[in-house]
Length: 78
Image 1 (spheres, helix red, strand yellow):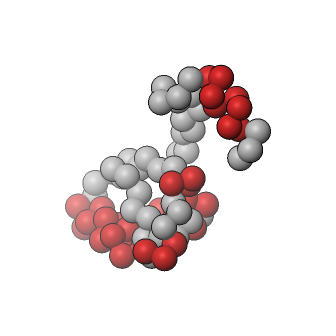
Image 2 (cartoon, rainbow, N blue to C red):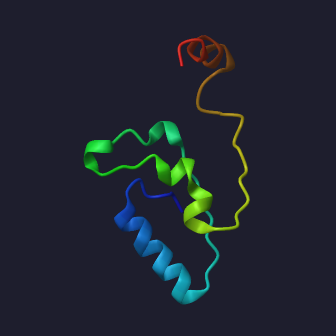
């Protein structure tokens, strides 16, 4: 599941998880959490462990969306 960018849907997901005992697998991109005016909160990414407790974080370090030369050029600006 994707991590919701705001607390209301996140709280709903956590309540379902707590009631059902389901495991939670999340995929998120902190660079995509840009919609602060719509209720987005970057702390759902930056403080994820505080909200879900014990967890394992795996990083996606290779993209297939863009070519490596484009990534190299743009990373100089980010």
